[in-house]
Figure 1 (cartoon, protein in one colour):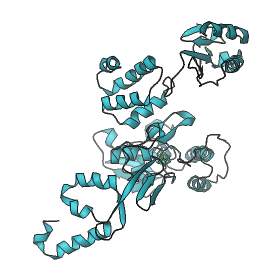
Figure 2 (cartoon, chains in turn cyan, yellow):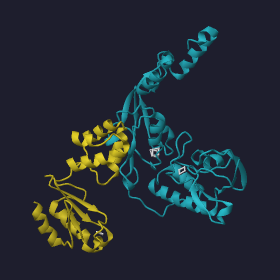
Figure 3 (cartoon, chains in turn purple, blue):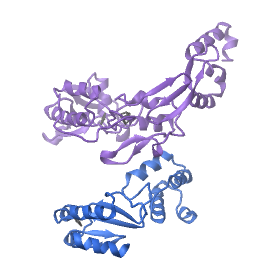
Length: 269
Length: 145
Ligand code: SF4
Ligand code: FES
Ligand code: FES
């Protein structure tokens, strides 16, 4: 067992054969009930290390007082690691990062709230390049781009341009042809920067500029998903066609109905 | 176009090389060609678009026949590069990054070109012109008109 010391608490962690599959400091801290703030991290996605907010101070007995700052979401633990999640050094660096974030998205209540927790109400920096709609308050954490790639597999949006001009958009900043309008990007965005609008029978995703029709439940008629999503799921789960025509509520009802006909019926679901 | 495409094995590490060749051949990366690259390599369009916008050496809009670089590295800057680029803006009627309406000239400012001793430095179509001045640049431009 690895022995990790986090904020004075000793935590035992199962060792892995490769360092790249070891748990990250963030995961270990979480399991020990220690909170580390994050913005660009999501447990379902690969670590990315973009926001730097989750940084912690690490050292080892043999490092003789020497220590360094690492991002806890991407740093894999090793035996005898000593971690401080809120040392003076950490707080100072984190405050600095929050000031930078505040300069980028001064209007964001997410960042304002975080900054306030560290006693920061204004920033020394100024930015003439604050993000505007459709990516108002975007901090370029990349969660939306990554979820569309790693989980949805459509790669509808990407980072375009570089440096201060970096932006999330669909190719050529035109409506994406592959976006399913599933809304996973809006779901993971920590800044609430992405809008999903369902108007009557049309769904619109702000960031991909894509519009798609909504699907109505065969039974009760409510809209419950977008057509491209429904088509993709139907293709994947050929045996569930009938249930996939229904909204979540009617689906549950139908399943219960079938179950109540006895064990023979279950096989037909 | 075919030739450039066939030059490369369809491996990820060749994408950049192909884009560079297209840029050289056509002076820019058209939407059509970016789409072709994505299709040929079986890579999401968004990824090729991301690469195409990331590197300064690529352009998504057609560049002029002659490309003028004004070095704005530190050494050239203190030796008067801003005056030269201002003069060029005046003469050509375009800001750095722009292309003249007749597609003859594209004006760009670039970072240190590694020939600081020659500063202020202007490069036209790859040819270095050192110790530039506001007067000299006007004459030099005539040669390309
Ligand atoms: S739009 Fe949201 S999820 Fe996407 S990069 Fe910006 S802040 Fe992150
Ligand atoms: S959460 Fe670790 S760098 Fe963003
Ligand atoms: S600063 Fe112009 S060549 Fe170095």
